Length: 109
Image (cartoon, rainbow, N blue to C red; front, side, top):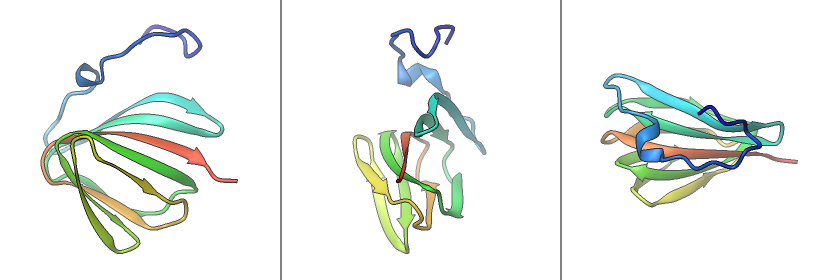
């Protein structure tokens, strides 16, 4: 993307990232002191181990299926589904199939 962050432009999320087997690929779309928006592509079976974050995080699955565990509770999400991961709560993600997601992180007060 050659445009600056302050210049309105459209992007096609379907074409932005490609799946890479055995890898997690990401692209930061917007980064601010108060949070950020990142697009991820997970190869099947890939994931992020349990961790916590100082931000509330909104996850929207745009393709495929994922298992998201938040504070020990397992949630299976598919295309078009979303969930909020509260700040400070332990969570992990695993790709059931290749999947893509938009992650919106918002700094808590």
